[in-house]
Length: 182
Image 1 (cartoon, rainbow, N blue to C red):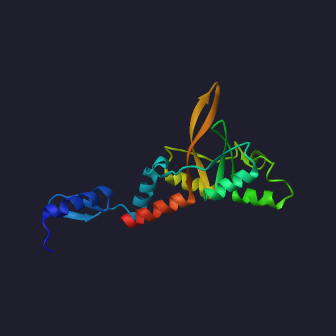
Image 2 (image 1 turned 180 degrees about the horizontal axis):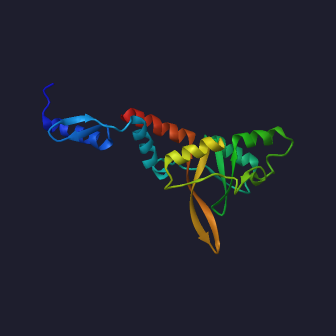
Image 3 (image 1 turned 90 degrees about the horizontal axis):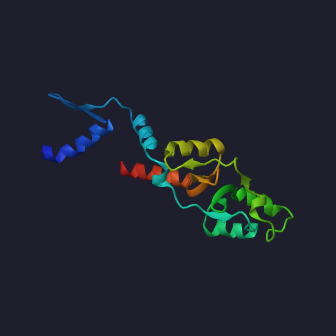
């Protein structure tokens, strides 16, 4: 192939660090013992939510259902996270809106706080959680996205500030990017 050792050394070093190859003195390089599934799992454990999270679509608890539906579709989101004084208090999805619109309630007057799923029934993740943990929560709870939160203390009460979101789309984009990079 006409390649020098210095040309191959960086590539061999990367393959050795990732576990695909093992370097043996006086022998050279041999295939590593680490199966590729374990390498993939380790990659997903090492990637933190904060590295891939996107901007959340947020609405105030006193916004009307109509305003919230507009917000949902203008931002092309599947879920709105509901806040009160910037604290996470609930979530509302497209399914919730469909149920609401099919009823006889006036969507121009009813606040979104009436139809949302309230805390503590909201599943969330922290910025330092692994993307694997986030994906497991999405699958287990059968939701489209999770709010990424930070715990803060206001007065003597712990509250959750929403700082981002992780969705099925976010995880799929990460998966595709990892596949293209290999």
